[in-house]
Image 1 (cartoon, helix red, strand yellow):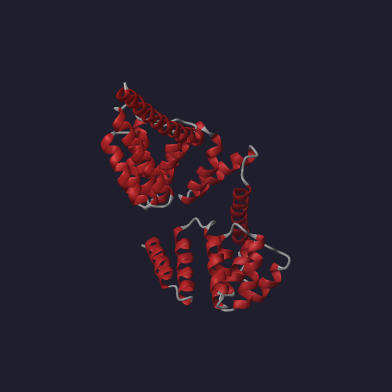
Image 2 (tube, helix red, strand yellow):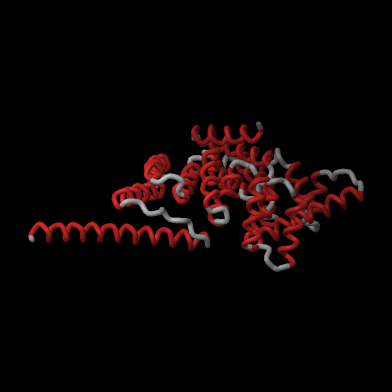
Length: 329
């Protein structure tokens, strides 16, 4: 009778433990469903020991990922995969970890495996877009983002940004016009759209007038009454050897045209000339948010490398020099 009571008590403890783990799993998958608006299939039934073992490895993998131990998380997911193969959630976690390690090849392979099991999962489709964008495969990123837009039109904002990154300004402008007509264009994109249109208008005006480039003193004088970006660009380009003037007009340029990366670039260069290296780095980082073209992004990284070098931070200098070279290659 005593042995039987012990067995019952042991069984009860095990059931309670299993119930607690399953409850945690329910909370985890509920969170995924909330963010993704689509559920990710849970593991099919395993025998009791294997199920508990799978769950232990899986939650350890999540824990390691949360503190940045991505390689350790991958090793734990490998253990999950040995217990239960072809699991959508495990593939998804593999992909997220590999992306954190900048291994876009494996990140893409695993998210595509996951999507084979659940092709319409919004959360995983968004992750695939992120993977393709990270590897600068904007064509495929756009194709996937369009699928997402079909399900949720609010996702068109990011589609605009992908078109801009793909250097398809015409398509981006067309979509921005549509969003603006629906009163759904965010202020940041609205400012960028206005700057693009102003640039086109100023270019047309410049071609029509067929006037020669004004001397710097005349440009500065004209800028007092005509606060156009065309004039400002010429002033900044003509002031590269005059740190005071370059700093003055680039600072004013940031206030007038906050979505134009050139004004941040020139402001950073002015700060470099004045040996204010820390502030220059901050300005360059702020300007990077508005950079679309690879060539300009490379120039930003090159100037940041100079600033870090002047500060004696050789590790960051090397890092940004390599980033610049990679974009130019």
